[in-house]
Amino acid sequence: MLTGKVALITGAARGIGRAIATGLAEHGAAVAVNYRTSEGAALELVKEIEAQGGEALLCRADVSDRGQVTAMIATIVDTWGGIDILVNNAGIMEDNFLVDITLEEWERVINVNLRGAFLCTQAVIPLLQARGGGRIINISSQAALAGSRRHVHYATAKAGLLGFTYSLAKELGPYGITVNAVSPGRIVTDMIKERMQGREEEWLQQTPLQRLGEPEEVAAAVVFLASEKASYITGTNLQVDGGLLMG
Ligand code: NAD
Image (cartoon, rainbow, N blue to C red; front, side, top):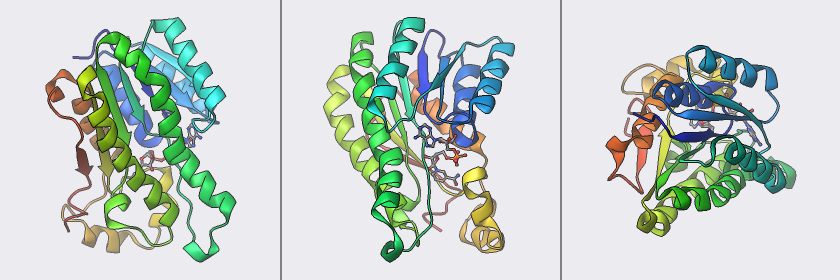
C-alpha cells in the first residue's frame, strides 16, 4: 500500500510515534525514525523494522532546532532521494496551573509541540512538491478541543496545530498534498502512565468505550490518512479517543 514511499515520523522512539513508524513500515514505507535522546530505543526500532524486511533510518534531531531539522532532512534525502509523508508526532506535556508556568516552561512546551511541527513541515514541503504530492499528518490532542486543567500551554500548542492543519491544507491542496490532524484521547504511553495513577476509574467513566486506547489504534488512523485510500481527505481532524470528546 505504501511501497516506494518515504515517511518521516518525529518522536518515533517510543509510544504513539513508535507504533506509527511500525505501522507505516508494515505497509511498505521506508521510515525515518526521528528521536532526540532515546538512541537505544530508536536503534532497537530500526533493527526491528529491518528484521521484518522493512527499511528504516535512525535520525537524531531536536525538532525545535532549525539547524538539526535541516541536517536530518538532508540525511533522509541523501539516503532515499526525497520524502512523501511527514508525521509531526514529537510532543511533550508538563503539568502546572497557568499562574505557575514560567516563561521557560511555556516556551519549552510550545517549542516542541508547535514550533517543531512548523520547522519540520517547512523543510519538507519543497520535497513533497517535488514528488508531485504527499501527506502531512499532525498529532494534536483531545485537549485541543476540550481543554485540560494544568495543561494550558499544551492545549494551546495542540489547538495551534489544528489551525496549522486547516490553513496548510488550503495552501497545499493545489500541490496534491493533504494535511490532516489526528487527535488522540487517553492512550497508554509513558506520557500518561504516571498521570493516570489514581484516576484510572474516573478516566474510564469519562470514555464511552470504557477503556484507554493503545498506540496501535492511533497508528491505524495515521496509516489510513497516509494511504491512497485517503486521497480526497484534507483539512480534517480525526478523533481517536474512544468517544472521550463526545462523552
Ligand atoms: P511519549 O512521551 O511516549 O512520546 C513522545 C516522543 O516525542 C518521545 O519519544 C520524545 O522523546 C519525543 N520528543 C520530545 N521532544 C522532542 C524533540 N524536541 N525532538 C524530537 N523528539 C522529541 O508520548 P506519546 O503519548 O507517544 O505522544 C506522542 C504524541 O501524541 C505527542 O504529540 C502527544 O502530545 C500526543 N498525544 C498523546 C496522548 C496520550 O494519551 N498518550 C494523547 C493526546 C495526544
